[in-house]
Amino acid sequence: MEDLDGGMASEVEREEEEEVTDLLRDRFRLCTISIAEAEAKQCGMEVSQPIISCISDLAFKFAEQLAKDLELFAQHAGRKSVNMEDVILSAHRNDHLAASLRSFCNDLKAKEPTLERKRKKKSRREDRVARDLLRTAGT
Image 1 (cartoon, rainbow, N blue to C red):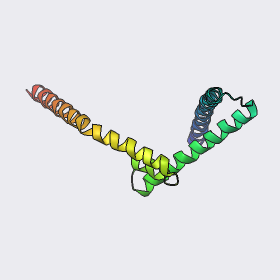
Image 2 (tube, helix red, strand yellow; image 1 turned 90 degrees about the vertical axis):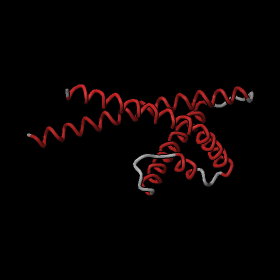
Image 3 (cartoon, rainbow, N blue to C red; image 1 turned 135 degrees about the horizontal axis):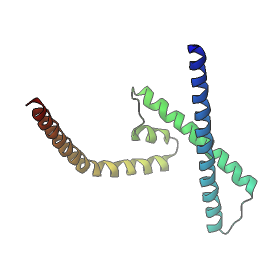
């Protein structure tokens, strides 16, 4: 019985995962279509629906492949999560994009020390509260 239940649970999980993937694909496609139509309008052009659908499908496939590449870069570096360096590495064939990403990353790093200090202060405050609660509970 347990194998049957476990098999059913994994089947349900796969179905839910497929539903989520389909939902993401549909939302991504709608956004891509909207962007393509807006860009065409801004340029004074018209783009046929089959072409827009093709662009949308290609963009989704590209995003899927990019996500897989980023995951592999992180794994290769011994990390469980993707960071900005992985994203920059993914753009190594496009000098302009890589430069833009590096600039964006540097801008974020310039703002980071302020955020780090706030986080440290907050965590120290939380530590004090936790210690006070432990002292109160111990008495």
